[in-house]
Image 1 (spheres, rainbow, N blue to C red):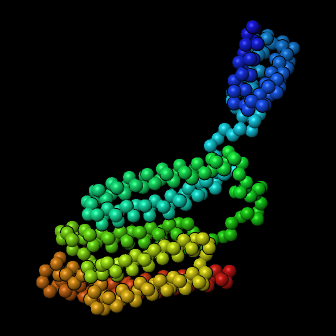
Image 2 (tube, rainbow, N blue to C red):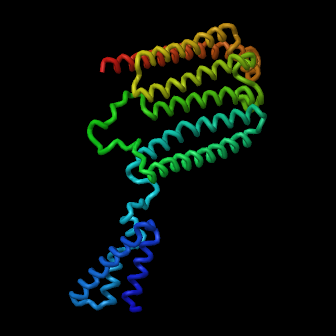
Image 3 (spheres, rainbow, N blue to C red):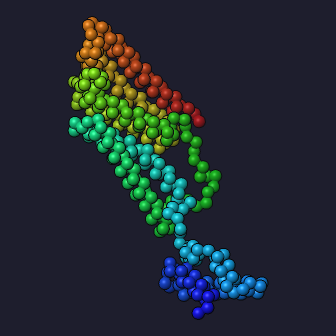
Length: 319
């Protein structure tokens, strides 16, 4: 066997390894004929047989890549057809799921009496594990779609008709994430206040009245969950609408009215909080001042948030 025949045979054999059996003989004959023709052309131009063969095989490149071109086999995990859909979905899932996982694990650890270090460690491990699972399974779904030629997500060639509708300011992904993140932080503060306390020198001294547990606090968490659902709904719609603004106003009333009533009854703020950290009558004075400020803040936040949502809904309707 000559050198030329050996190299050609090796190249054809390498290229045909990944070709389906029923196509192998035809494609091998076609490839071998193409190589022979190109070698003969180079020899006719004055090249010797060995250098001509090496030059032809070099130009053809990696035989696996050549075979993939023959059979239409993809040499990427996720191609451009699905890449943007994969990346958008992956980011959305990470932004929504990971904070919820962190909050849920931290809540469970705090309720079980774990230390601060154990709570943080468990939350970090759970978040990393959840991120790996989300990335793996989301990628796997798109790999299957890519390999099976699924057409469901293929909207065809891009046209201006596929341009997204402009989103109203305050209804984007960042706004939704900020809203949910703020609610999770506030829920964490409430739990921390009850189980650990906000004053390092007074462990267990809570700012909120202990009598609010469990029913008032559970009701607060339920309303906060509804606020998170509302934020997701606003993002899904892409703008504030009148029904969404009305729902926002109702949720603000559900929070503000009971909070003000509890504050007026002296059942919102722990009556021992400021007297415990400030000696003498000054503690009671500070307690009254803070209670007044908290009342004004509750009213101001409820009015501002309701008005802001209403104005956005009006502007959206006019547009």
